[in-house]
Length: 273
Image (cartoon, rainbow, N blue to C red):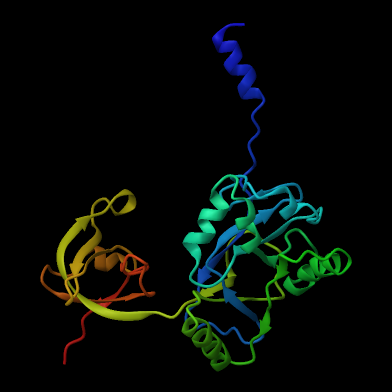
């Protein structure tokens, strides 16, 4: 057998999982009326999509979970987060992305927030899994609690409770929406952010549709930390960027373990009295 023919034979025996079509979150702002929606904690783990046969990442890569982990999983699709506890993302990622993690998987729970391709609204779809688990319970397979939102203040209090306990944020969803994929206006992430100022050091050119204008700015905070900010700018800001040496205000969502600003977003030029 020639080398080329051998390669073709071997390649034909390789199977690739299809990238799953999933729903994604848009960002909440205070102008949205979400009373009557439901909320749950936004877990900082690894997305785990079960297609009825195998467990996949968001990108479609097969997750090498032990056989016992998915042994009694349902014959229908479920979507959720592989998670251990708050502030444990690096450990979760190590367990999920490493082959033969063995007993480390006993720390993982699969927190389900969606049952795709079922009839009805969100709570009706989740009830399909609930009925299945009532018959065949699986300790590590859990349905993420959804709480009805009675007021905007209730949402703010829940967000404060989650973030005070080092949680990432909250997800709010319209429970009456039928199952859809893509980035949805009926599924929003709510995060607590902070804001501070930095001095613009350099204007960095854009790429793609921003090729002829500003792409981002390099700036420095009063504590000496440098960072790049590329999101939050309107087209007019990119055409006429803040001057080098000027101060701008940006928001961020805490810090990474390396002390870097999480998701910095431009807000405005610094307000002066």
